[in-house]
Structure formats: C-alpha cells, structure tokens
Image (cartoon, rainbow, N blue to C red; front, side, top):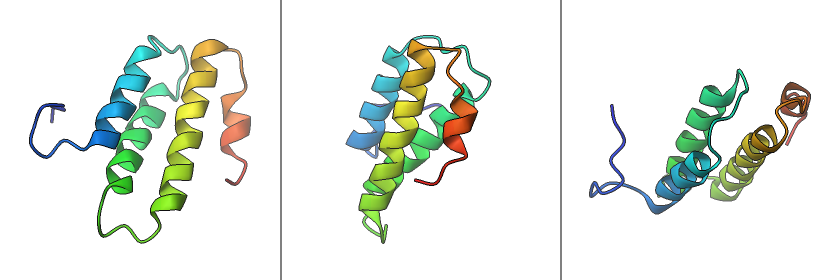
Length: 87
C-alpha cells in the first residue's frame, strides 16, 4: 500500500510525521525502517477518535521521531540502548 498524502483520509499528524522523517534524509541505521513505520502507526493513532490515551501515544511518537533524528545526526549513537528504556 502506497501512502497518498492528498487522499481524503490522510491524517495531518501522519502526513507531517512522514514529511519530518523524509526530511531527515538517508539514515544509516538497521532499525530505521521499523522505527519509521512505528512512527507512522503512532501518528495515525494520535488522531483516531477511538484512541483512549492520545497523550501517551503522542509522547511515544515524539520519542520515536527523536530517536530517528538522533540516528540521522549521529549514526554511531547507540540507539538500541535508548529503545530498551521505558518511556
């Protein structure tokens, strides 16, 4: 399934998350794709009217995007160490 940012069901948070991650450029980290997909899923959940804990989901989304940014800025950063800590 290809993401279409202009589709009627495209959510603003997901669209922005995708733009932010794309703007980071190529990230040389083995977990990049997984973290990106996790960010997109969390972004969709933030705007889901049935989501029971949108603030917690938004907090996790911020953390995942920050981890991706850190990996983009410093590929030698031990990203796995941060991921094992509770949020």
